[in-house]
Length: 439
Image 1 (cartoon, rainbow, N blue to C red):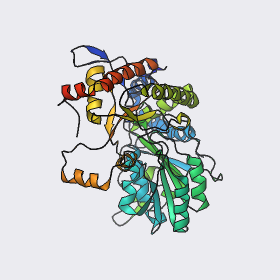
Image 2 (cartoon, one colour):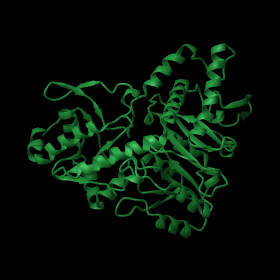
Image 3 (cartoon, one colour):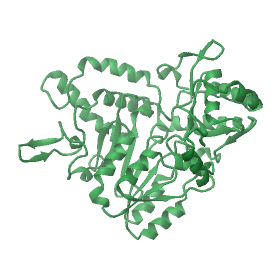
Image 4 (cartoon, one colour):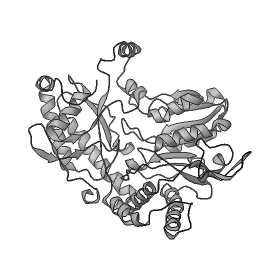
């Protein structure tokens, strides 16, 4: 639908028969190609590139103004109150969540963090490292169990200080009802963090006014998943959270006064952005936001939903396929996980690339506990993996769409999957040792 807006979509790649075919990128959940407008804006702005907050020259002033203005554009994109929240620029969602986990030490203290069994490792491990963590279960469909969430909040009697949840799963694409979760969390005097890495690029997000019980306290997301792959991410948080205390990284740009005996830290967000800012990353993110707003996030979401529904219907016609999806397309982003019976997921991914020039992802997608739940991996299975690292690991094949993917590309995928599903023994033998796939 929007192919002309994306850079590199007509790239030809080699396949196993020696021909070259148009690359079909179905791995957008990992990273997206850049908008052409982003590349253009990077080139347009590059003559003015200079230091931020560190010079009085014309270029430095222009660069500093753009950088400062960008925060408000980011806040506006997710409808965050500019007087209450701040936008802190980081490298990616992982760094944003790690930064917040460090900052909340005083606020959480001996309290509890509730994570869930559907989280990306980046929204699990930082909390495990510093706090007592418990986990909200998923149901048989892989959806979050909100009754279990509330039962845990009741169990801990006000000790839960943070509920941290993905906005949309990077394995199944399931969208969590973040505002309903926020209402429940706030009822028990807890805050909520939303990992927005998969949600923000594909679905409208509204943090809501802070007086609304359904408001979102914290959200983190990455530009490289929203058509601006220049190494920038965002943490949006209440300003007061970062007002006191020492930042997790210290150095240039974080201070007001330094003497041999004392340090006075500057105010957030600058306090949390040590070193030279990634100005080009911010330029790219803002141009991406402008393009997404122009296209309208609701239109993007509706189009990708149609693409997902079309794919799910046709995947059912593929022999030997197992689809990990409940079919509720209204409540998911454009991510689908599947396996082909009789073929290791890594081999299926390699065949799709070698035969059709189709880029997908396979494995556990940095969400091993969730994959273990979905695939019913037992503790005995895990012990086997630990004893023998050469064993094939449980996992799935994942396709994930961007706004530029189209129905014809899906047809190419389905036709190749039908060939694979009808001839699993042949493909298993032919690709005994494909040049790339991990066990």
